[in-house]
Image 1 (cartoon, rainbow, N blue to C red):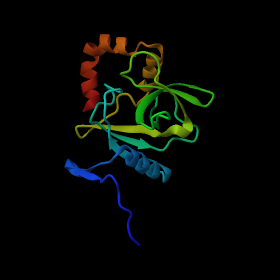
Image 2: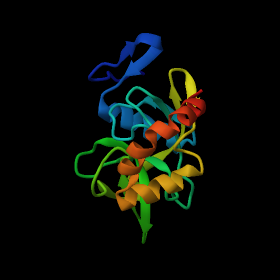
Image 3: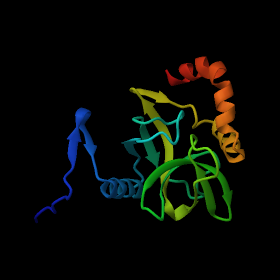
Image 4: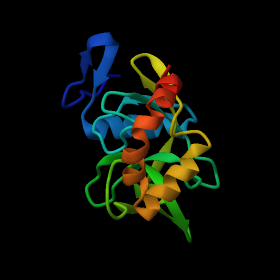
Length: 171
């Protein structure tokens, strides 16, 4: 049996990481999550900063049967573009979820159905260390502030006061 050729080719990056085209990454993630296995990949972009930063390694696990709770961070495919995104659930109504990046001012960027979600983020690793801030009980408060449009203003005013605690959580 011959193996199918992969196009475009997969490249191995520093640290034994694979660089995959978007479609291949999504397909591999879907296959892993369908088998109940977690999937780790490097985040790109700043839409979830400061909780998830460009270059962080995030672990996505399968969704529970009931779907994600408000405040959880989920990986989903934007229906219009086929783009893979990782954003926070800020509201849930009649089986649809309102999703928004933590660093995205203004209105929510998507309403997503559960079937368009791949999984939920359960771990963030930055510079080899686990970062729990944004995934614990505070995730509900983050979602409420984000939905009200207050997350960025509150974050900018409280950042100097919270910086020592954030450093402690990031250890």
